[in-house]
Image (cartoon, rainbow, N blue to C red):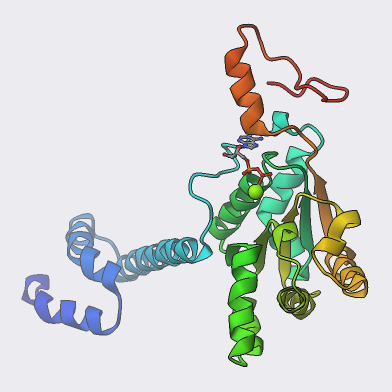
Length: 271
Ligand code: ADP
Ligand code: MG
């Protein structure tokens, strides 16, 4: 029987490179020494190597998907102060962050509220949680994405551009109401919404609720149809709070404990 030290580790390394098993290549010697010392059965050694290769592969995949998602840096669910938005349920948001149910059905999330209320933060943080769970997400300012799709349409590539977005289980369209009022712009948005309907999810944030969406889609019939598709299977989060930034700035100015923001109704929303 050959002794373990007679194995040509250099050529084994080459084989592992050829097989694209970089993690096993890194650890097989160290694990081998341990396995010999502790008398692991061969199958246990092999299983340990395979497990590490898979775990590392998953980690790299998530890192790649995170880079690809273009999320806002530093915005997490942990860093989101739910007390500042008492009208939304943390439990409901946490359930959304799990993803499986609504993303599989292609349902949508709609976040409404005035500027500074935390829509972009919460949307991006949800995206981050979902990527970490293995879902594909793309965050985009709606105007940027619309511009890209318009360029694609000019090059007669709209269909394939829309198809490329299919790999994302969730598309975050931040600030949909800021899209310029231009018929060709908004019709790509309309096609995007139609293309994903009941298949792939969209998360929309908007400063204005549907009543004012005629400024998003210039044609009222288009507005009705787009809203109808977005709403059909959706969770709506109304975030009607005073700007978080302004509140934090005001709180710093005041000496005492936080008071409710001016105009806040009902419960104290300051933490
Ligand atoms: P919106 O998109 O609704 O205009 P943002 O998400 O951009 O609001 O929020 C403005 C700033 O305030 C961001 O820096 C965000 O991280 C912060 N912020 C808003 N709401 C909260 C909150 N509830 N908890 C923590 N930070 C918040
Ligand atoms: Mg925003």
